[in-house]
Image (cartoon, rainbow over the protein chains, first blue to last red):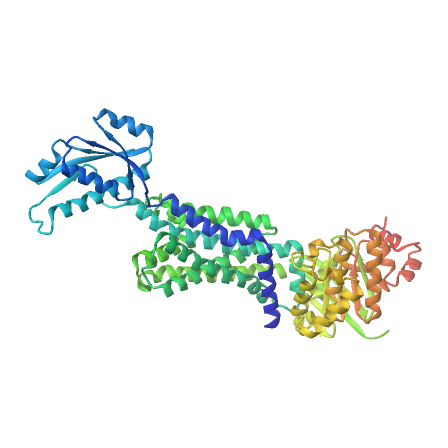
Length: 369
Length: 242
């Protein structure tokens, strides 16, 4: 045991002395979360909005004030006629124009309904979607207030753009599970395969094998630090996505962490397997990146839904561990379901882990023959 | 001669139908410097792997440091040291950390490691390098250190697999002085080399060719037997009879 601990300590020293390794371990996950997060951010702040008010009454004034004072928008101008719309949108500062119809306030009081249009700059689809979504909800808010507590006299403002849900919010929830899935398998498999092949390349593996350390101890000793650091990584990613994006874990955190451990273990055994078939570090890196990262991004359902894929890709993706882990982590984090609903995926991951272990041991023995 | 530390009789190692070691028999005695020569692919590495417990023989008797290679390879590993041509030290660790690591792997106590570390630094005039990374050390020093680490736990036998590959003549010379000093302390040195001048320094040498040992004796006797001026000539006469 003492021998083993000394060996583990040495592995930690390798990691902490190598800035590149540290960067890959902690820098990349943080960067990915932030980049993915802000790229599909639901935040809009001070988006330029112009108003074309054909009615000019008290109500349109109030509604305009409410929209502008929400903090999401900044009024970039007051337009006089329809022709100006195209002009201001083309300038770029204005992302959307809100148009109140003639006699907006009168109609709202007398007929109980009035309509307005939200014309947004479609060249930035993401922002456009967000703006129309935000505006719509502000208008709905306004309608409620206007109607007062006894809202049996039905008053409706009909915005021309209707958003049923916020699609950006959905993709926002998609990416954290996806990033966790990708990062864990990439780091674990890449790091372990590289660290083991490095020993082979430098000739230190021979020396270790000749030493009284058992092969199992050598492998465990090399893998243990990565297991610990990857687990810390999971905690960091979850913390970061909670603090920065307010993404909660709906289900059991303990179950989530246990599943993460299983997935880390699976990725580590995959890394060991890669190291048994590669002779050089380059080879290990190549297999890890091309063989794992690409399929994970493209085929695991991280970005493209598996249901929309041609059948053949569906079959290919069914051998990818990330596909199952994404289901697990999404279920726990977003839907809040328990083990009952994900036992099948969990079992598949366990079987894959055992299979990778078995294959690695076999390959390792052949090498020793 | 005294105690046998390596005893090999009728050793055969096959990989499929390929016979890497064909019926080898030899003995190595305590405190001896035993040179193990042969052309590339002659089967030297296979023998070293079997003797150091990395590989199991197909048949024959193999006994190293008093332990049977089939059943007690773990015991063998504790009693041997090993150094190969590629560097066996971690470049991103300091001299001290490397020594602590290897001492720990061989199960040495902390106080013993500290003691040996101090001895070693004093002996090699290494004190100033104690906390330097291996990557900052000149090649010659690294080699010496790698050897010292290989015998840190005072093994009965140390295996050196082409230890002086790619090293300048002066460093090689110094390295051999270290080997002599080690052998004089009773540690058996089992060394493979490509340099025939180094073979002259050995107490006894064996020459392998195509999986068989074709000559085994002291350098002087071999030279006399083959009517050669140097071991190199002996080697060429054996490996290329025409």
